[in-house]
Length: 318
Image 1: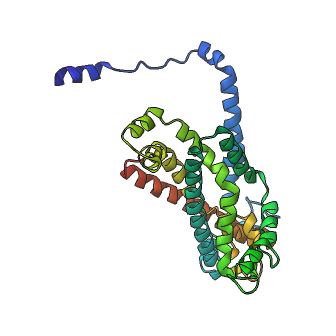
Image 2 (image 1 turned 180 degrees about the horizontal axis):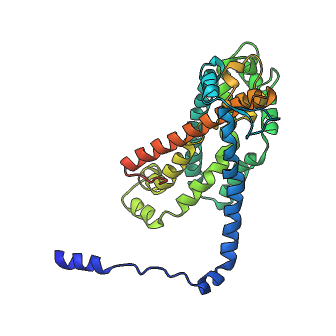
Image 3 (image 1 turned 90 degrees about the vertical axis):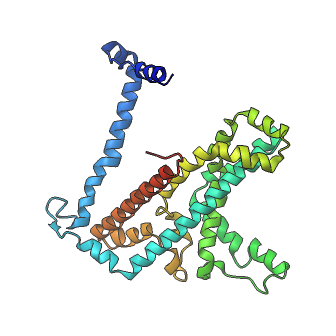
């Protein structure tokens, strides 16, 4: 039997795909659109990487890339000897990790809870309302936050009326409130949108698994634990790996719009640092070096997370 199985395995050989001109003409539209996308990617994603050479130059706009003096790693040494940049890295990592953890868990929990709603009409209404904030600009969101958290805002009114605090709190003047405010804003804005892909994954689970669980006497929590979560685990792992690489993309708009002099030490991110030094101060080389650092760290995080997933036998990117 072992010999037969080996022989059978050896005979199962996929025939090589022959690409004929007839096949090319048949897929002409698909190939043209694929070429357009590839060209777009090369022009807007790969060609700009040539600008990274500025990080190794004392770049002057009047001299250009080809005539600016080459200074090696001097700008990187300047970055890591700057206490402000080290603080900015801390802020970016902290807010990135908090946003990843909170928004990731909130989206999964919301998708599972929404899936448990039995009335289709109610589910559609809740889902529609939940993902509408995704389409609001951060300027509108920060305006809403300012109104909510101001001295006469609804949050302070509720806290005062419930005798939790004696007088209104200026939330934007205290450093300890800034990161939770940013996390809350991301959850409110993105949870409904992020939950869509998990809802799609849940709907692809075989209904017979839920029926078998019901026959075994499983309640709602047991079905979620033993059927729903294992069913969407591959989706969770892939999205987690992709989001790990965005940890240093903690944000720019909300930190820039909500930040002020009182909370500047905890509100600045790498993107704001690049804006302040690379553009406002005209030091394009330093800004490029900071951007390269962020990109390299993101790649390293993705590779590490992917290897951990591979070691544990989970879904992975590559």
